[in-house]
Image 1 (cartoon, rainbow, N blue to C red):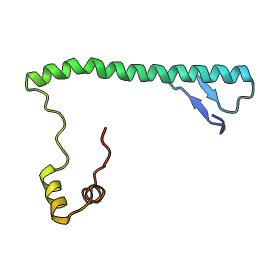
Image 2 (image 1 turned 90 degrees about the vertical axis):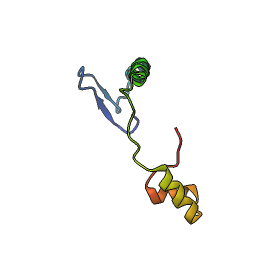
Image 3 (image 1 turned 135 degrees about the vertical axis):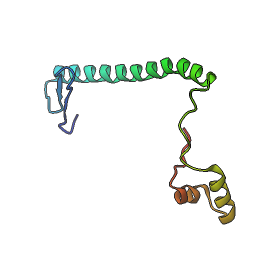
Amino acid sequence: MEQGVRVECTLNGMWFDGREEDPIQKAMRDAVLAFMAAQGEVDYTNRAEMQRPGVAIAKAAGKYTGRARSYDYAAIKAWRAENGASIRATAGQFGIGTDVR
């Protein structure tokens, strides 16, 4: 906000101006934006929690198998063994990431 950004919410027509100079208006702006961010995070978490039981039921019924893998573990492992490559080099070769989430 300090860089003069203007944030507009298309859902309810609210807008927040980063060039605001009045301390009270700045505090209100920051409080509302913090609240909106927190509410968004809560909604995201609740949505994931609500989906878990449905996914478990679908998996038990054999209807949910998840996303198909976009790479072949055996091919990656074989290439790495053949080339003696590091994890980073192997990831670069196959265009995949090294981070684990």
